[in-house]
Length: 285
Image (spheres, rainbow, N blue to C red):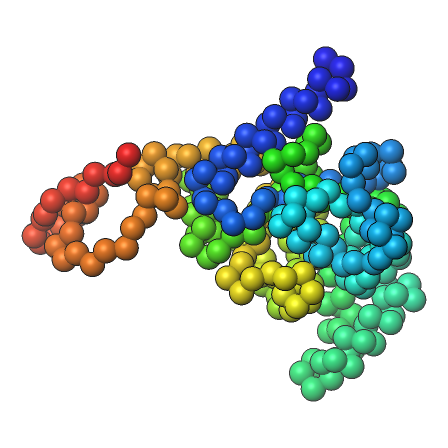
C-alpha cells in the first residue's frame, strides 16, 4: 500500500469515528484531531499558518476553536503563537530548572501567589512539574477536523456538555474497567488537555480556562475530553456497548415515576433483604 492509499484509509477511519461520535452524542462541534509536528514536511498542505497566511498571531485555543467551529486545519508554531503557555508546554523554549524561562516563571508564580504559597521552593516544585514536552522535539502542532483529516491523530479533543461528557466517561469505563482520573486546574487548559495525554497516554477531562473562554469563545457548558493516540476505537466501542444496553446519550429521558421498573438484579437484592420487588426494566433499543 502506498502513502496515498494509506492516507485515504486513515481519512475514512477518521470520518467514520467523527460520524459515530456525532450520531451517539449529538455533538455541537467537530472533534479536533491533533498532530504534533517534528518536521515541517509533515504539515498538511491545506493547513493555515496564521503568521504566514494571515499576518496575525493567535493562541492555540483559538486555533482549536477555528478547527471545531469552522472546520479549519491550522498549523501553530512559535512564530504564530500569542500565548505564553503553549510556548512553554509544547517545548518551543527551554523551561527546565536552571533556565531563564524557569526562573522568570517561578518568580512570576510566586508574585501571583505570595499570600497563599508558603515558600519559594513550593513554587519551583510546582513549575518543575508543569506539563511540558521535551525541549526542541517539535516544530509545531496541527489541529484539524476529525471528519476530514488524513493523518492518524496523536490526540483527539472532544468538546461536549456535561451530560455528553458523562456518557463519554461511561464508555471509557465500560472498556477499561477503570475510572477516569483527572486533577483539575482553572488555568492552562492547553497544557492539561493536550500535553498531559501526549505524555502519559491516558484519557483526561479538562475545563476550558478563562483565556479560552474569553478569547476562543468556549461556551460555559463545555468540557474537554482528551482521547490519546490509538484509543478512539476503544472509546467508540464503549459508547456503542452502552448504547446497546440502553444507556446511551440519545436513549436517556427524564421522568418522575414511582415504583419504577428496575434492572433484574435489583429484585434479586431486594429479595435477599426481604423487601418488595417490582417490574423489571428492559433497555430501550
